[in-house]
Length: 458
Image (cartoon, rainbow, N blue to C red):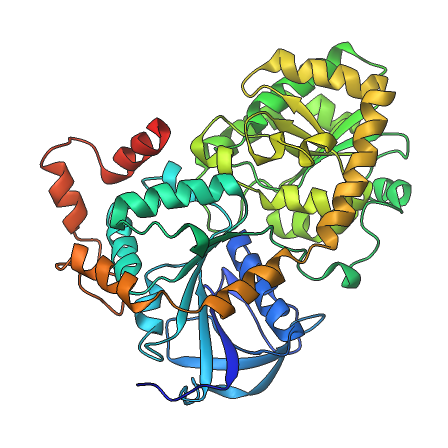
C-alpha cells in the first residue's frame, strides 16, 4: 500500500514544438486551443499554491515551473519527476494514450483527459481508426476524469466512452469554459475601450462597423457562405458601414483544410476591388495575424463564429468565440451550437448555415442598428464580466483533487469487461486495430464513421 501523501502536485504534458513552446524568460506560445486549456490549468494550480511540473516532449524529463506570465520562470533544470511517495499527483494531457506512460511514474495518480472540443469525430483522415483503440485502452486502465467545456460536449463524450469501453461515469466528466490565457489583468483593455484607435491602426475608419474573424479558414466553418453573402451585400449597399477583417488563413504546417484555403485565395482574386477599397482585409500570414489579435478584439464591433451543421459544431466552444466573449463583443453565430442558449444567446445575431440570404438579412439589421444592436452589445458586456470572473475551472480542479482516482471496484469492472485489452506505455503503431478488425467483420465502414452514426442516432 502506498504511503500517505502530503503535498499535491500537478503534472502537465504539452505537445512538443512547434505546436507548443515554453522557455524561461519568454511567454508561452501555442498553436491549438487544447494547449491553452492546459496553460489555464497550470496557472490555476500555481495560484492555489500547488507545484506544477511540465513536459513538452515524450521523455521522462520534466521541469518545475513557478510562473507563466508575463514570462515563464522555472525552478531547477530538466529532471526526472521527483520521488512521488510523498505527493498527490494529478496528470493532465490532451492525448489520451499518454496516460499509460505517465502512470509509470505514479501508478496511483489521477489522470485527467482535457478536451477543448471533440473535434476528431469529423476527421477520420486526421485521427485514424486505431485512435479509438488507444482511447479504449486508457478508459479501461487509466482514465479517471474528462474535462470539457459545455454540456453538449459532455453528452457526446459520455456517449462515445460508453460505446467504446462502457466508461459511463457522469460525475467524472466536468465542464468549464477555458479561462482567458494569459490572465485578463495582463492584457490591455479588451473591447470596452480604445475601439476607434485600434480600428485606425488596422486600416479602418472609426465609424466602420467592423466584423472580425479571429481564426483560420477551416473546413468546418461557414466562412465561405459568409464571404459570398458579404461581398454581394456590400456591392449593392454602397452606404453600408460594415467592413470585415480575416485574421490568418491557416496555421503553419496545417494542411488539413486545403479546400477552404483554396476558396479564400480564389475569393481574393475575384474580389480584389473590395480588398483594394478596404471593405475587406484578409491578413494571410498566421504570425502577422496573431500579432494583430489584441488590436482586432479592441476594434471589433462583431465577432464571426459560424459553422457548418456538424456534430462538432453542435458541441464546440471555439477559441475565437472565447476571445470575443472575454472582449465583450457580440457575435454573428450559426444556429444549433452551445451559444444558441441563454445567457450566451443574448449577445448573438443568429444566421442559418449555408444560407446566403440569412446572412444578408443579418447585415441589414446590423446596418440599421437600434434596439436590435444595442441590446446585444449590453448583453455581450454582461457575459464578458461573468466569464472573466468565473471560478468554474478552480471548482472543477478542486473536485478532481477531492474525488481522486476511480475507485478500485469500478476499475476492476472495466478491466473484467475487456480482459484482452492490455496496457501499453507508448502510442501503438498505425497497424490495423483490434476494434477495427472486429467491427469490420460486420460493417464495411470505418470505426470513426460508425461512431459518428451512432452518436447522431442517440
